[in-house]
Each structure stands twice: as C-alpha cells, then as structure tokens.
Length: 248
Image (cartoon, rainbow, N blue to C red; front, side, top):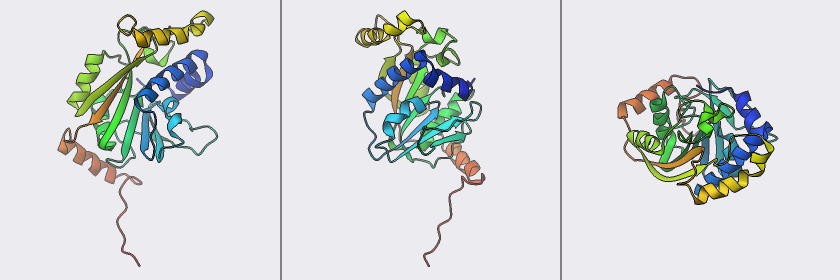
C-alpha cells in the first residue's frame, strides 16, 4: 500500500519529526555513498529526501515515483527530475543506473518480486542499490504517525534473503532512526543523543529502519522475464529505443 505523495511530502518537509527522520537516514546513506561523481543516480518510491546531496556532482539524478503514490515536482527551485512511473515498468534503459535508492517502495509494493527484477534490470555492471525498509523490531514500524508504519516491515535476515533470491548480493548494512517516533519537544531535543547511542550500541537499541546496500550479480534472474520486459517497453510510445539513422 503506497501512501499519497502529499502525505509523504508533508511528513518529510513540513513536520519536525519528518525533517529529523530525513536527516538521520540521509546521514547513514552518506556513510555508504559519500559522493556520486559523474554517475547516474536514481531513486524509487519516495527517495527524494535522500537524493539532494547528489544533485551537485552526479551526471544525472532521476526520482521515480510509483503511480499509486503520485508524483510531485522536485527539487524545488531547480529543473524537475521527478517522473511518474509504473511500479514494475520504469522509463529507464537497461543497465544505465550506477546507484539506486529505494525508500517507501519495497515494503509498500504489492509485487515486490517484480519490483526487484526491475531494480536489477536498470542497474549497470557494478551497479549498487540501497534499500531503506522499516525494521520489524523497531518502534517506527509500530506507529502509524510516520510513513514507516505502513506496508510490510522486515527483519534484516528477511530482506537479505529476498535480495539474494533476485540476484542481488547484500554487502553492507546500516540502521537509523533510533530516536522515538514522537513530535513531543522532549523527544525531539533528545533525538541526536538517541541516534549517536544507537549507532554505537546497535545491539541494545533497535533502529527504526534498515539500510541495506546490495550489488547487482552478473547473471539475470530470468532471461525470459527481462526479454519480456523489453518487449513490453518497446510497445509503449516514448519508451522504445530510437532507430539508428545513417549520417547525411
């Protein structure tokens, strides 16, 4: 179940709790990917809160937002890079993405296997993806005051197993949102302390979300599936590759 894009925008950009969540998760992502110089970076779901640091140095940044969620223009005050896309049929060429961020995408999908196949398809050789999902044992997945209280929460083992089944190799893990999912002033003032303690003592405190970095394995999950996707894409106006023309 995808939340409406307006609800996600209001949470991350218009609430104190959402801005704190954005900062904490983005900090952990930057631990994994401090830069994306000359690379193509894509996000799926509602990943735009995490993509802004890459706008300055990436060759290209694309924000894909699923149709059931809706789309909003982003980034503010700059040329728009957000695109409305079918959940399992993205308007991207095969193998063109270097880095992919999926947030509020996998746990909200009714077809997670097909979604992972599409993630695999768009990544190039050596491409990597980071999947941000709610932690089943964390407090954030138990509260419907935040977007992480909707959809399917995961344990780390469940997410790793699902990624391996679709030809991803999990490499590094991070956790974030050790703070309480509350907008009360006391918890907001203490949020930085909770994040620091949680990072140093992850066995004592459960983070609200997992970030799992996974690389693309070279063999396709199913040759017939990938071929079928390309056939469907070629039949959609605007997505079919342009024929080569002879120079005049």
